[in-house]
Image (cartoon, helix red, strand yellow):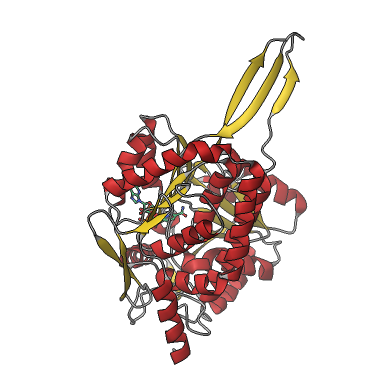
Length: 490
Ligand code: NAD
């Protein structure tokens, strides 16, 4: 690493916000506690951050409740302008924000930049949506009175965000909340609090009023979040993370009948038919499999290739996977960063070992490299047997398990044989087959001849155990709005 780069890192870290953001004030935790944030590429601590207690959580929710009434009265145009300013500031600060994100999340700087671009897209989309909230006015069916339907902010929201996309997931929740007129308490993942705090500072600078966005990093999520959900003061819960935690939060939310949005785990099938453009399929696979070292909920988890093209596709894939450069995401030329922590690294290793024990062949990689940090080698597994755990559990790592199939009905059945239903991918040059299979796949999103399903203008979300509700698209703002019917007698 060059000295210039090292200085830049130190400058960005030194300038980073590390305190709680409550009621428009930056400050320490009430008991003065802090926790460490680590660089996953070295395993070394980066800095310490204020560690919110349950009491701080309540303070944050009280601030959100206090700010809710006045914020709901702001005009759509005012809220839209706050988001346009946020969009502009994110653009101006993108270099520093990307570096900060890379330091705590590990992803290569180019990927961090791409994530900021996506976050800006969400902010822009909801700046536009804020002034398009509409209702309905119609005559009673019997011709007498009139029916007026309007949309109002649901109220204070609890937003729990993950570590894999610390900026875009924050933006995808907070921007629609602001657009709709909802205040919020954001609980970022303990692995990546710095990015969300930086985003909060930008919302503040963009003129979002005090108490509208409150951020409480904590090392004790369960102890802090559960009382907030059960308090009866919040009206909305939006969560992105594992299905296990999502299900637990849904249980907690049921007592208050909270409106909930859940973006949970996935186990995406990636289907390559014999008539596919194999080079395009490979590009799509690289995007969905290797972005963020495979730590994405929409990552291809099971790669089904039609038997006549399996050998050719596997060879191309093995060659591409051998070409990654592992390292710290801030270093030039690095194309693959570490996994987020040791637990994630151990999980991926265990899944690969299980598959190999059951008969899978390792074409490339297969283990943890001998270096500090939480890296895993880019890995291709062939002939993965149906009972291997890796085909049934979310991998969240740079591992591509290949399975051969013979016909369309067989692969649709295999693809849908999972409790998850977030994303699926399908590659074919046959239009009829494309439509037939895309419609038959049981998932909230289908990538057709492309390896990305993330688009601010489109509804993102899953079926089955992958979640409830949608983020992005026109649906995204609706998750923060309540429908009111006014029955008018004339
Ligand atoms: P997680 O579900 O534990 O964490 C997600 C968020 O929930 C984080 O902010 C975390 O601090 C918070 N959280 C955890 N337990 C909580 C609780 N009891 N109450 C309130 N908040 C709580 O995910 P993880 O353990 O960091 O990762 C494990 C697996 O989850 C991954 O391997 C992956 O399969 C999945 N995951 C999915 C996504 C996604 O984008 N859908 C994101 C992160 C992780």
